[in-house]
Length: 133
View 1 (cartoon, one colour):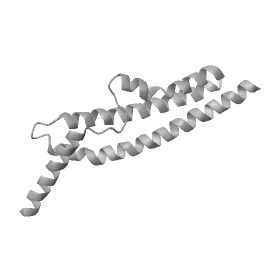
View 2 (view 1 turned 45 degrees about the horizontal axis):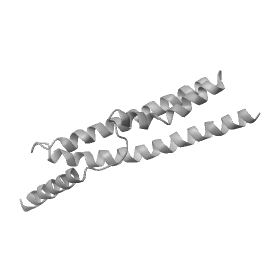
View 3 (view 1 turned 180 degrees about the horizontal axis):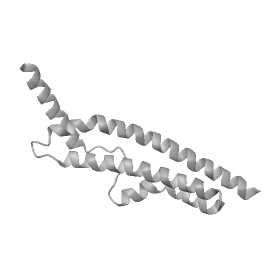
View 4 (view 1 turned 180 degrees about the vertical axis):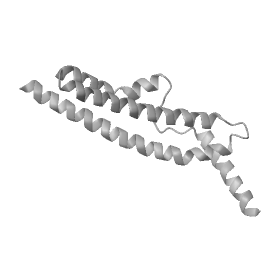
């Protein structure tokens, strides 16, 4: 009886944590999509560092969301036959971002300040040039 109560609490924790993490990841992904076009101004000048980091972060966000939802779904399927194994699979879904980060796929919203300043300056200069013509 106590184990079942603890298992249901852990199930709720896993589902809620992954749900809100994916909502946060979706917001970060929308922001990344909006900012991604600004990196295009620096590519012709040879500054591809910001664009490559942007690509890696978008891939990491998508991969993390996919793997977490897959593990949560598999945990829910396993829950029906083996309660403890299903709970373990769902709890392991919470570790996906940390494991991805160990392999260089960062899912946080950190910004490379020098790249952001250069990209913004390039965009402003381009806008000034277009407006003058």
